[in-house]
Length: 375
Image 1: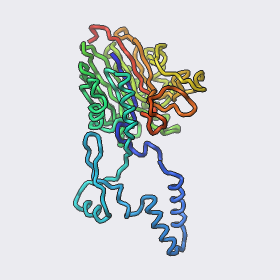
Image 2: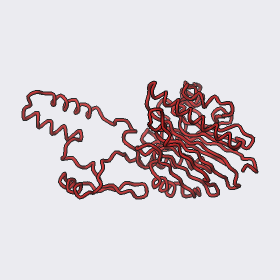
Image 3: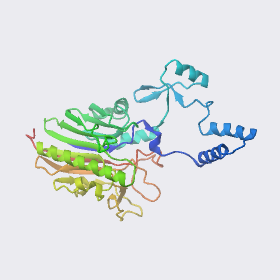
Image 4: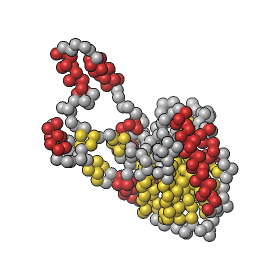
């Protein structure tokens, strides 16, 4: 049985806020000039004319309605009607049509193809995905790019994110999901959601009806500072509590996977990572991964996955030490990540920039042998 976990960073559309500001130097110069003109006490006609030009360039002008679309979603793709004038837009708003501003960017087709290739090369029986925008996109991705891999059951969990960072699961024929519990409503000490995306417990069964369980989460927030670290400690403390509760129920295979956002040596992860029954596939001794043949091939970067795999360690596939399951092999697939100019690992043909790469994260996978009679 092969299980894979992959932070796919969306399938077809990604919230523009997740790309950073995206503002060029020209945009920032226009914004500075706009603000300086607003601060002027006495404005001439040329100043007003320039303000109108700048408001158009930075997207404040009412004469620039192209970003407003009537959205319809079909098979994971957004379809919209661009309005020709502000009057048309105003008329449709009064007619109670649902108009929203576009906040998503389309992921290039070559990047989507490379995402599919990363998955198809590993060919897992159970595929766990983080940062999936919606169920329709997941089904469309499965049917178009993974049609030959016999994935029957498809699940999507929304979570707390408003940026399309849900969770997806694809199960091969014979594998079933029997129980699912979500902790998206768990609150912190301030009454706010503890998890920005979510945490699920999945009870699954293989074709021989043997039980195994998975905890899936995504703590890949970019926030920094003491408050963010404290929240991460609270999140990991709760995950550790759930882990212990699950261990007390059964002694079958229990997996924790997804993004924890920080390297394993960080103090905020210590409560979970130091448990004596937890095993990390990265420390198993049988990890398979393409090595770096560049200048960093013999270097072990602080916070990296391993020597020669100098990517920041944020993705995890942890499992419990149990006689009910045996780890046969495991690996890390980073062939969908552009190696850049300072590194040199094998990546798929056509990946020559960050735009074309599948994403910033590797896919982690593991082969387990479940003991017969594990019910």
